[in-house]
Image (cartoon, rainbow over all chains, first blue to last red; front, top):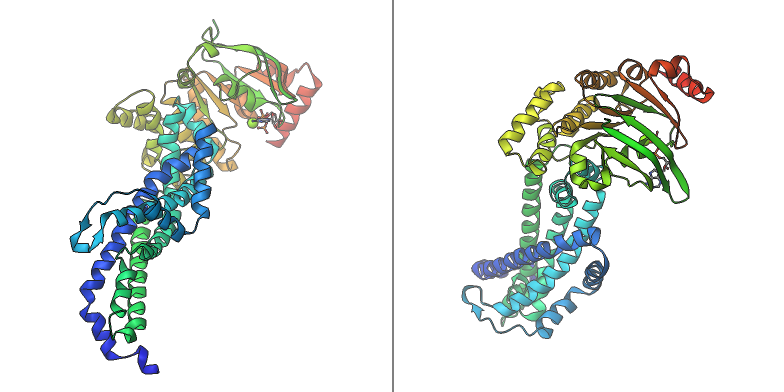
Length: 238
Length: 243
Ligand SMILES: Nc1ncnc2c1ncn2[C@@H]1O[C@H](COP(=O)(O)OP(=O)(O)OP(=O)(O)O)[C@@H](O)[C@H]1O
Ligand SMILES: [Mg+2]
């Protein structure tokens, strides 16, 4: 039995399909980028509205956030894929994916990420000392100027660790796009070992893609750490 | 004509009356020092002048204009404020702290603002620290940046709310020195401080506030040496002993 996991032939099979897995990796990375981007574009204002907004708008934003955070990601992805009338947008040939499927996955992962990024940003805004706003107002800045020029820049810097965490989660969760047949890394991995006679390679394939996910999260987090060090202001996280 | 006139001001938080029928006037170039026990309403009084807090009753005039008739941002441009815990913008250098109001509020160009900021930082003895962030400065240096930030807006009056209370004793002197220079230069200053040396030497008028009321007000020598009220004598006596 032990030989099942360690057959040299299975590793050779994976090596010969390296470019096939590479395309899946590219889809995974693209989906991570679009989802995080959407998450930021929607989450940033959502967090700000939860702090500074009032009435109907704030209620809507916070309710949508609760629903998004409370729904399993596979359910969300089914909802957007099967529930939304996304028109057929054609294929992306070289990645072998349907654009509409990719869009559905981006919406599910991105909006859920927005719900979490919004919380990260909300917490960061609330952690900024009230004295910062008072000092800004005391030189004659409007509330909006004070928010834009004093509170947001500090809150964004404090959000970096939370955003980093969110990156790792979204990257790994792109694998649920498997459930709607988007040919990202996990889907392609399965395609490999489901080929006739290749069942013995399953474990080797899974180990390989685990390593790819790990390398992606590890290197990106390291680079973000570096970036944070470069752009950090002394005492910015106090 | 007085620069600042406070008339019969009342202010409550809920049931708690924090200021009761407070009235006083300041002329240009006056240095008014307010003292009083913790919770007596000193900070509240200052904050009413630049409308960080709104009064319930009475009126406050700046240069004969009721402050509620002035646009609040305009008012705050004309009335600077220096805080006990500095409140420097943590993400900006010393220079950046001074330039922000200049570019955002006064509409100066970046170059003009930087030149002006460097000028004011020089005046408070911080030319060398212009590129330092608040976290890299000592408390005394932070407070001097706070003063430069207020001064650079060319205010008609500056409010100081216990500007040295958060400082280690050895750092108080450098801040008081800047404040003395300002006073001698003719800046109009309304200061809450318990630095009795400063009050004696720099104040034109000393006010003792207790439980939201002005107990006694007059030239510092008078309050120190021949106070009318026992409470004044007792409070100032304790303060002077402490320092
Ligand atoms: N925003 C607020 N809401 C409710 N109560 C307040 C508020 N600000 C001040 N108070 C209360 O008003 C009273 C006067 O406060 P204030 O800060 O003006 O006193 P102070 O003389 O500056 O005291 P300290 O020497 O401790 O700074 C205190 O009892 C305080 O608890
Ligand atoms: Mg106070």
